[in-house]
Length: 247
Image (tube, rainbow, N blue to C red; front, side, top):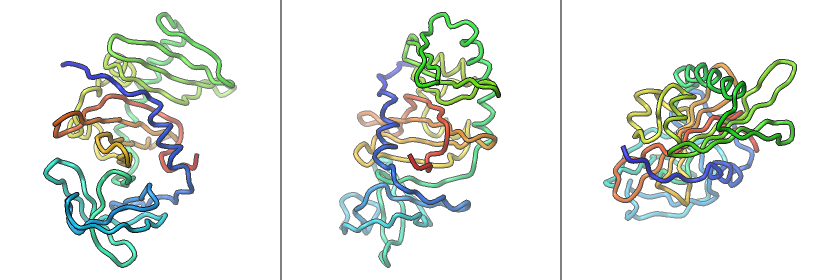
């Protein structure tokens, strides 16, 4: 399978910074949307060409009783805002979908072993100290990889991991997610905790799987190119905390 060029991992930090405001906890059950833009167009139909009205979005979770895909396979969410019912496009929305993920948590067992192996013998990896956090970096055959750890009396604490290289993804997580379609990812990991599509890049989506045994999140980054009907995974990240944390 041909591997497409990757976007830098910095895109995740940019998205977090652009939405770094107080976000209330998501409801535990059901499907909910959190608008990441102050104003959005509420459409009468799940169609970008339908009549729309620009509405100020509340900073709260909005119930999504249904979601559909349009002819270009982009998602639309049915919502009621300020007494008006209509459809919001996927871009600019953080969608609460499921609970914490045991399946994603299971991948961390393999990750810990791979990370320990590199820390014992870092051939091919560079390392540096960054404010008390050790950063390991390498360039694989088809992409890059980074992981960060802090070490203290209680041992090694995982802080961050990112890769666009399918071999490194398989080595660290036990499965090569790079290049997979969203249906393939969900068949392996189940329903994401959250899904997000940045407002200015509707071709990119993030699937967030909150781990059920620690305060960490697995992020699967997808991108559609050209006339692709489905996005494919171009980067996988693991970060400390939750997507809904205040930055």
